Image (cartoon, rainbow, N blue to C red; front, side, top):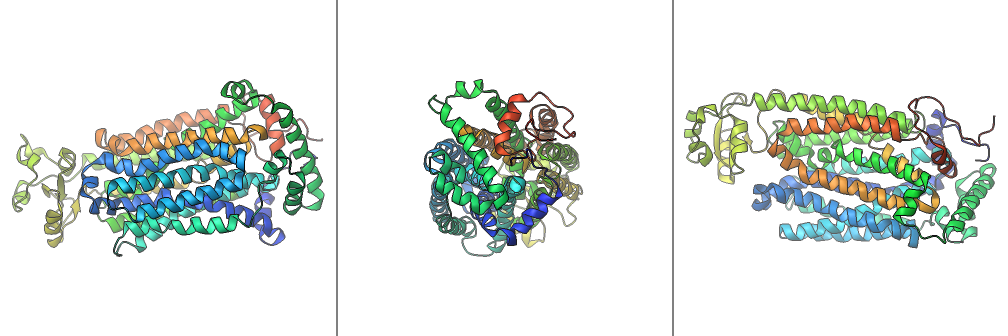
Length: 569
């Protein structure tokens, strides 16, 4: 640490891997805290599959789009509360206690959801889970960041992101495992209580963050932990740097930290611009619509079966987890900023592909056959009352009313029947070996939509899936880290709430194609934002980040090496 900014290269990734035998203590800290990320990811993924079966059990949920959005988004509303109070809890009681409290809330919420007998009780359980997720979303990466050697900090915080995506992948596996079990979605939602309980046990055996301990005057405890984290040649430099940072914080601690104080401090203001902006764009390019509604999107692409939708969504979840592994390799090699820009360029391309695929699917949907429809005794009332029924397609049928469904012909691209959507009609259609559609229509462009979805995940996950969390864990000065982390986490959950609460309504109002096009436009704006406002923190010790932000001017040539003023030549 004393020699300036450590060079972060390919050896950082190798060093991170070697921790498993060189210093397993650091890896144990990271994995134990990272279970919070696993819970975060599990909740994100599990509701997408569970929602298919919740709709089947509660018919009012199936008929009301706003109720589906409420079941998804009330957890996000809870996360806003959790993130809002999480910063204060982390600063007042410590990172470790913040994680344990999050686990307790998650455990309680999972139990309530598994026992729910109505959509209302289910929503209450989702709120509890959401509060826990909101707290864990900032406490886990913060704990890992403060308990990691500088050289591998990015890789270990990326481990938290990997566990988020791993939790999403696990949720899809569990969803598939319980599709044939009695209670289906109850098991899917209830299983989440297990990892929460495991993390409580693990965290009780681990120490508090050394940086937090130093701030609270418990220097000897902090030094003992730092000696376990750093090699003997590095530990004295780390202790000295931490002491200087805390001394500076204590000098300013007499001043009340308010919003005006934060915004008047250049390093904090610039850090908030970059951190909050990254998290806002992370949400508004549509990632959580993909993760919360992935099976629904697959059905919109023309794959009707619940099980098929879950199976295909499992592939996207697997790609997401793989992308997080890739980010662990590249985050300290390529750098945060460059990785984010490459990611966003790929996201723009993928969203353009999704826009074209869904637009073509909407324009070339199978027509409705009057003869085929008349073979059934339960024709959709809207079709009966239509002035121009000969011009109706599958898409017209589904958009006419939530009470209408489409029974495809043997050859799914040929004209089918527009019928009343209920269990009886679904069985009648299935008994004739025909596919039943209520979300999307049969299409020869369905596979291109799935390819676009896969490419979106491949590009998003290693960059924008990881970089915003890594940057937010290291960009704020120590004395403001808790409150700034809380502000940033609250921002991401508010953004998440807006996107997830509006996605299904947007697809109904303007169509799936134009919804993805909107996300693509946001991704283009995000590219310019990253170039202008986001600094490169690769290999910069946490105590040097503040100095860098204070001196920072706009740097468009982000690919050029940047040196700290303290670096020796």
